Image 1 (cartoon, rainbow, N blue to C red):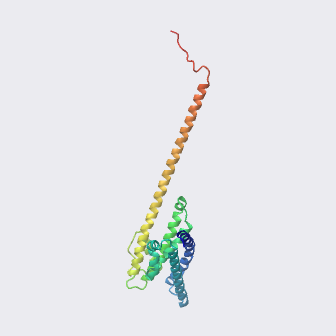
Image 2: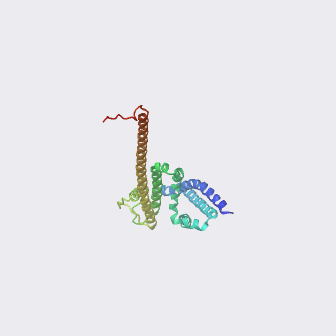
Image 3: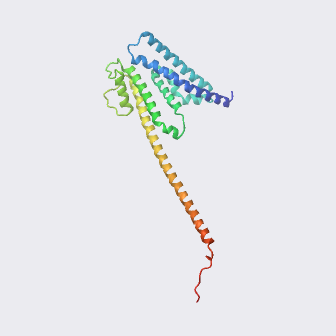
Length: 253
């Protein structure tokens, strides 16, 4: 297979698999969060959720292997996609797979320039909600039942997420397990990234506003200069058309 044909197949597969991955990730979210949030779930339902987790894990693994096989430069793909491989090999990081749900918003907002920036509020809000819910479920699963744990309900987990992702950090709730603290580190980084996205978007908006205002002023100035030049030409034409203007009166000495 030539490099061009491989690149074409890789782009086609990636385009379609991204959309399919959003559906698979949403199913995984339901199967993962349901047993954590509902402690009275019957054993049969818990088994169904476990099977769903395994099936979605296998689908993500198959997607990774296909993209690796179709990648024009497999070594580069392997190096530039370490998180995908890490999520497949380390079950302890499986809650982070919910970050794939951000792909839903990314696909819906895959626009360029001002169109994407115009929807940055929707994008950031949806991404924050998805990451926050993921972190709340993950930390609740890790902390509930642990000795000395302060996060034992979903409400407490959600409050902890809100204070952590906004970098407020009251400290009234904090994880005590290694998994919970790992989730906390990821959430802290997400909070920093969120602030960066909002700040960058606002700065970009202000720069565009200044650029548009300056451009409008420049266009108006050029239009005024053009109108003035046209008025001068018209006055010159009128003066030239008057009879006897070239014979100025002289006084006799």
